Length: 418
Image 1: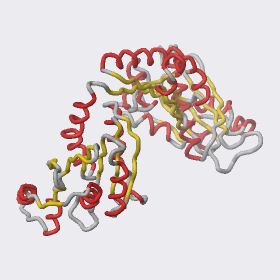
Image 2: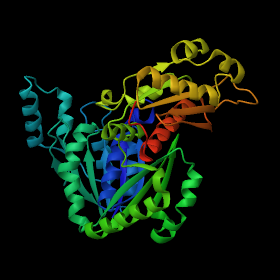
Image 3: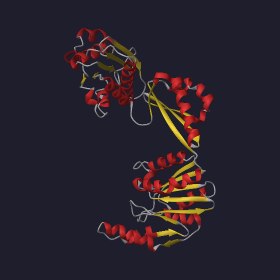
């Protein structure tokens, strides 16, 4: 099945609104193995709407149009669609009665312009809107099925569940698509791609997508077909990718970040962690405390941005700062050990670096970051060179620190005493 989406609304052509409806519909099409061949956004212009709908007629099996079904003068989706299919708009007394009843339930009466919402394209089926006053429409034209839905997301969501999803399920024959996402941290996209080369040959490159973002690469796996077959194929793909990427995979799914995974590991092992931060300015602590229940394993942080604070709060020797500078392996280790002593925790993470845009040098350019992880048996260090603007560098530094801790926990520890 070939499907297309048309989002109507002048606000979608500006910076005011994001077209989330199209994303929701695209996910539904994929679930039912419908190929999305096009998405378009047009303003509240009857001629433009008619032209875009007319261009899709006969070229796709399904066209979903969202927005422009309200009562105001700029809501002209009904008129545009009627013009495209060459049919008149007719007043529907039953739709008008339903609108009146809805307003009466709130102790109000509809305005005269609400009557526009009771106009129905000849031959169309009315789709009730339980969450709003604008009903949807369903019609056939030139071999294309057209759904007209309101643009308000929570109204559209209910109508998609009730009307569109069953329509797709009835025509997919049980076929559909499923996705699984595996996530890695602080591993270059090119390196992940190279490691996945055998999986590309075994499962075809088009079913495996590598998506990079600062400090993270996601591997999205897709399988199509009837439920049993696609489930088995997806399980085989996940197993193979896990073999190829190994322990660099920190999680699965689209929700929850590295801080959630680290938090779960700490809670399960009854371990605690604190942070000592310079260039990240508390970002690492903020991420750890995003997780509900983090008070079980995170007592606090010390943000020592200045050298004097590193000395006074973390016990970093002043001569060490003078000799090596704040951005150094020696200082990172001392910060981590100082935080571990102060909070009496199993682990302490320290971050010190140059986030920019100023402050770099030939020896220590912007993006130079030193990380340290103090535990009962040792203090580990890692130096990284990060690329990007200030916020990107700070985020990646926090990601690198969390990944450092995750690897340490999984490797086992000697922290029987804090």
